[in-house]
Length: 156
Image 1 (cartoon, rainbow, N blue to C red):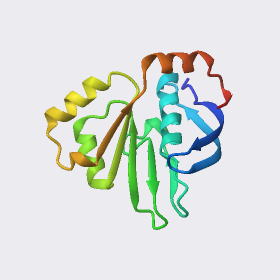
Image 2 (cartoon, rainbow, N blue to C red; image 1 turned 90 degrees about the vertical axis):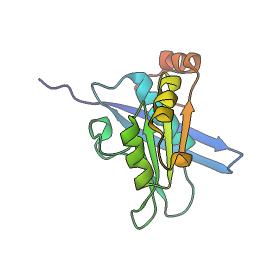
Image 3 (cartoon, one colour; image 1 turned 180 degrees about the horizontal axis):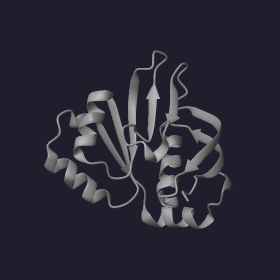
């Protein structure tokens, strides 16, 4: 029998003074059976860090979740549906990053582990439009600590 996704709920008070972003987020995030909690946490952190308050822009988790490889983990679109930002989580292959840079003018990758390996692979691929790609990583001790205190309903 196939396992079903586990729902996680996050209530997040977002305050980013540098970007003048102050918002309350209520996120319901489905965790795919094959997805680690660490990966889910990086998806949620990426959602917070990429949050936009520009009217008309909509930042959403991909429609199929982690089981839909044709979509990014998160995408920011304008009112016409044109993709403004492709936001991936994990260690995407260089051909996927190439596809992302063709689809959106701004690409961000949030590594959930081993960012050095990801950066080496991207450098070796000699991507066109590499200037569009931002790579972020979190300290392992931070993610481990967050992992220890995360349940199915959390307030940050």
